[in-house]
Amino acid sequence: MLGGETPLRARFICNTGYHWMVWAKQYGAAVFQIEHRYFGQSRPRVDQSVQNLQWFTPEQILEDYNDFIQQMNVKFFSNITKPRWVMFGGSYPGTLTAWMRTVYPDLTIGGIASSGAIGLTVNQYSYAVNMQKDYGSNDPNCASNIKAAFTQMQTMVYSETGRQVLEILFNLCTPFPSSDKLTPKDIQFFFSNIFGVFQGINQYTGDNGNTATANGLGIPITCQIMNNVSETDLVKRIANVINWSNSFSPGSQNVCMPNSYSDYIWTYKQPEYDTYAEIAAARSWNWMCCSYMGYFQTTDGGHDNDIWGRQDNLANNVTAMIINRNAHCADMYPSSPNDNMELIAARTRIQGLLEGFIQANKL
Image (cartoon, rainbow, N blue to C red; front, side, top):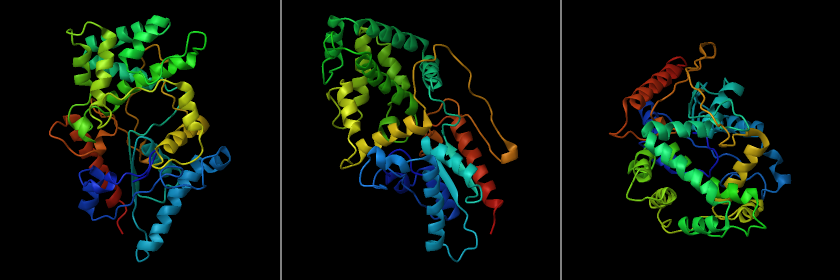
């Protein structure tokens, strides 16, 4: 399991319901998880000063994984002529899995890249376009109400009185700057935080990856809240969605929402590692996006577009599939009685591909 943009989580190995763990047990495989450099405890240098981030490149990251596998072969599998490795990764680690198979094709016998972002652009507006599709396909009225609420907030944020109302409705930690000091970044930061809640709900709906999504955190109940006519204020419905979403995180109820762009910048300018390396992880992610990945999820689409389709590349033994009506990386997580037929079929197909990798590379 390739690490990505967070410190390593024990649950990715300890939770035997995750599908790579199910398959590892089935095949009697050893299991390893490797942490990505500059995240968690994997620190090439003492801090994250710009000078010390010069070793934060995709080439270095892939070489870490290449070296790790070779070192594990020496340490644990010296009695095997050619140990068979299969890589797994979801989201950004899914991208890394695909890159590893391209750069080091002989190192492993295969890779499962779940929801890996491929063909990245700097302005990745297609992400938000598809968010809009997801809310609209669940309930057109829900999407309309979200749009109307955001339109209303965009009007409110340009008046002193409107901003004061937003500060109360969303329990903002910091008031907006006064009119003579208000900048576009302050406004964008506010909307980014609101948008981010709907982004997270959309991305993980029904993935069964944690107790929140397993217990209903997702688009269907979000749309029930947005369509609740007993609340006549559409903007208040947006706030109600955020409060409901926060209720799934212990200690997050009634916590104020950050609203200072300058504080945000100051926090992530600090090069020192924090105790749990969570702030450092966000700094690292920003560095990655700014220096080599792009993938800024903007709302610049302005129109619908069709970016999906079957993308198998038989010459390189690459199989791509779209798992309709499912969450980000849903194929990786434990099975649930609520899994739809598309997800069940995809897991069956992935297991068939895995079997093919192993059978084609028998010792």
